[in-house]
Image (cartoon, rainbow, N blue to C red; front, side, top):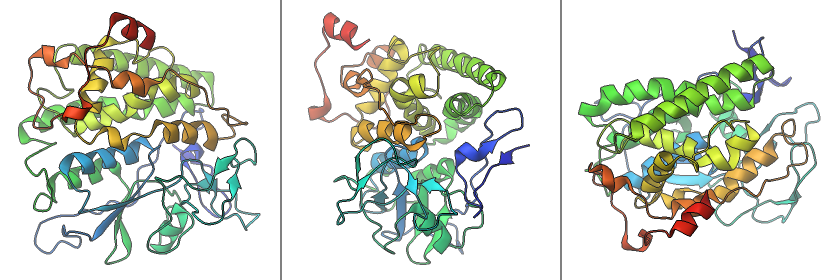
Length: 379
């Protein structure tokens, strides 16, 4: 049973989803409609009808940004990127303590602190973050409330229908499936299939244990409120990390010989692992940089065309280390190992002799083989 520690208004965040034993139990997304080409669909695919609200920081939202980029849907589905550091979503209501995602403020020049009024200073806008383009909303919470949300958890990503002015879905695993399959007539890369029929069973198999033990496992470690809950979570995470490493030592991608949605789901967690989770969520039994297999796997994916432009490590770190005063009161951001620099080194995954799928690396993303010294210094 999950205990929901919501605010008086009913608003909550993932940090409020705890079990009586102190373990974190994520509650499923509430908006689960589908975009479909089937006749009579309430949400048929169309160009310029749908919009994504995302955060560079959020791994669930990052899934959708990667899928959109790889499929070539940038001119089909528009995007707004919110600011990384959570703020009060009802700042004028002293009785509402909810903190969450806010939109950029391009005009005020206001300097921000963390939700407890400490840390920073943080700007009210970065060049790559935007104001809400449709309703002048100040927070993601306002988008949910405008759509009549009754759940009270205001997350990204949101797949939004601009025509009917409502939320289609806020479940990332289902959004990326829709982006992969339902917009091919508009996509610039329609031949890329990230969920091929012959690999679906294998994808479902790996997803079934990677999600609870790695994707969500890092949160189970970081949000645990008892030693016992943490010990269970870190043991399961460590075993899953080793299992992933073993699989990828024998095949190029996690579900087989082709890059799939399952790799996107795994990559966004591994990308954040050393810079954030090892420190912030206490997942320090393992390190991606210390695994030649997983570091080169991440390099392989990062160097695929259009993937690197979906990565913003500054906003990833600023969100995690500065949005939760209960975990990091003064919002000090650790320097870190510069993991993204490591990803720009040449990978060795071609040595497995397995096809990369149809996704290519552009000439300007190719790099020469690293020297031994540079490899050692990056680990």
